[in-house]
Structures are given as structure tokens and as C-alpha cells.
Length: 283
Picture 1 (cartoon, one colour):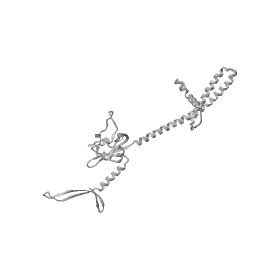
Picture 2 (cartoon, one colour):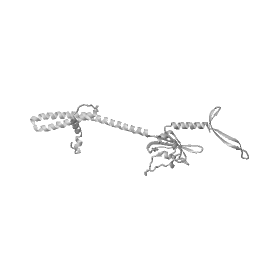
Picture 3 (cartoon, helix red, strand yellow):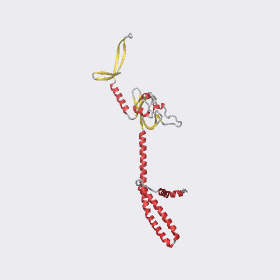
Picture 4 (tube, helix red, strand yellow):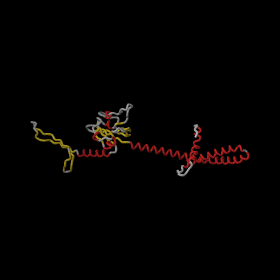
């Protein structure tokens, strides 16, 4: 068979020749049969172009489970060349990582053979883990279709690598969680600012009255001066904590400037004082 030139152009022709014998068995001529296969060849070329350009893995296998076609995407994804894949059991190429407890492969090579009937995996779409030739695994979507020809049946497995999809889904989930946390912090900041403003006014009254009581106690009851000083100190401590809350709620941009390390440590200890006392921690 091959391409031959005709008046209307080139045609792909399949020719078969038989010897023509006489009654005594001697060859007296040749009988030739010609079949025009141009359309069939064009269809094969079109199919080959489509499968070669497909982004998904396309693996065609017969009723015995042997590979008859292996497109370039399958070569890249599974890490195996077409020449090495043709004729091999498809179960040794599409190694589904549905492993049993003992570590053996759950779907053997025989699981892909379909000498009779229509297997359950035809027409279904599943998501599973697939093993490459080097043993690494990746998430994949697998669909298998059946093609009935006059002389035999073929099965086409479409395999799509979902690695990029899973990475994108994980990134979307991470960003959603970050957004949720930011919304929570914004709501917390608004609540904190409101509480701090509400506490500022009574604290100012407490501090002012403690100072006035301390001044009056100097002449009337000196023994109360210590108490008024403790009230004032406690109120001022509460005021510093409230100011820290306000600074957190405002979420101002960080500024680089000289500061007292001792003051920073003291402020942190004041915020943690209740928890430290409750846990019996002394600093």
C-alpha cells in the first residue's frame, strides 16, 4: 500500500496481487485487487493530530488490556515513551494508587482486560492517585470510553493530571482562611476600640479622685495616703493597658524610633499579669 498518482491527484491505495493459474497449476497471469484508502488514511492522520495536540493523556488499549496508542501528553505525564508503552498491559502504566493494606496493588493488570461484556469502569469518571514510571504519585481524573469496531473493541482512557488544580484549590482555601482571620481581627479591633474608649472615662475619674483624696488625706488622715496611692497606681496601670488595646485596635504602621526596652517589657508583663498569676509564674 502507499500513495499513487492519478489524474485527480494522489490517492492512498492498498493493492493485493494473487497468481492466476491454469488447469495444470502453472501461473499464466496475475489478478490484482485495489482498494482506495485515502479517506481512511486522512481520518487516521486527523486522529493522530488530535491525540498529539491533546493536553490530556490519551491511552488506547484493546480487549486484552494491551496498549495500542499512547499520545505525547501521556508520555510527559507518566514519564514513559510511546515505543516502550505500546504492547504493554495498560494496568502496568496507569498504576492506580488504590493500595491495599498489605501494600499490594489493588487493581492488577488483569483488571483492565475485557474479553466479553462491558466492564463497570467504562463510561465512569473517577478521581484517584496515579503512579508515574518513577514511582511518584499525582492526583488524576480518569475516564474510560469504549469504541466498537467491526473486528474488535478498543477502549480509550482519558487521564487528566489534577496536580495544578489541587495546588490552586489549596491556595484559594489558604487565602479564604487569611481573609476570614483578617475579618475577625478587624471586628475584634473595632470591639476593642469601643471597650477602650468606654473604659477611659471612668478610669480618668478614678485617677482624678484618687489624687484628690491623697491630697486631702495628707492633712486629715495620713494613714490613708498609701491606699490612695495604690488606687491611683492601679488605675494608671489600667489606663496603660487600655492605651495598649487602642494601639492594637488602630493597627498603625510600624515606626522606627528610639524606645525604652524596659518600658516595652513592663507593658507586655502588665498585659500578661493575670495569666501569669493564675499559672503561678513569677517574672
